[in-house]
Image (tube, rainbow, N blue to C red; front, side):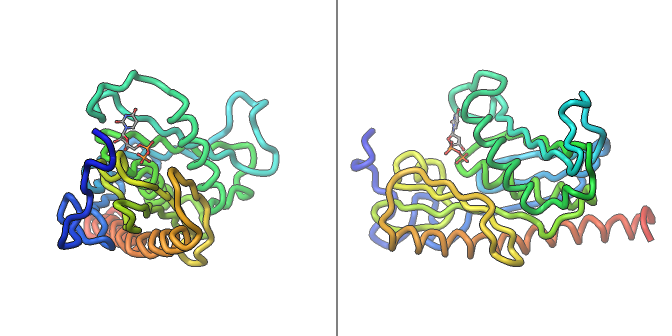
Length: 246
Ligand code: UDP
């Protein structure tokens, strides 16, 4: 079906899933869900389900990959075969390599890598169910998992997309909006300073629309940042109550 044939916003200004232009999909975040990882997070965001496991800092092997002055940040984004409608061929492809690279670079901006020379910090991002916005969901979950692992960071990174559908700038595109919309602008920030650590764009926006979408995505990031902090507080509250930490 052609994009012009699909109305993504109805006459009452509602989107296909009933959201208004400024609404996020429902988000649920849980920290510390895996016992064998140093840090972990499970995140649901609309129809996305993402699991992140963090290992490290640990000695980088083989030795020749080691950086003598800082840790290597190695994010690996993987989409499960069963996570999308048309079964995905298992293993890395161009798209997952690109997403792994941009997420690694974003995380490097906030992790205090100089504290751990000659090590790697591995961030495994597994997409179990995908419904648009998985790089933002994966990076947001990675931020929580890194904090859960106790990795020193200047800030907990967070991501959110804005975009344009039916000529209107909206927050957090869903699947049909991503497929048939005009533009998608995933953004990640360090929320204390609003430093942009990831910014990509698919489609076309005017300069005014771009400014509006960027502003909206950053506002979305701040809402999600609160949910990340709550997930981490809940995790440590339960450890205190369970007597695991004092
Ligand atoms: N998608 C898919 N098969 C693929 C890759 C992506 O069905 O092999 C879907 C999936 O729902 C994904 C969406 O297309 O979330 C948008 O993909 P995009 O590359 O824009 O990245 P994302 O929005 O997930 O960060």
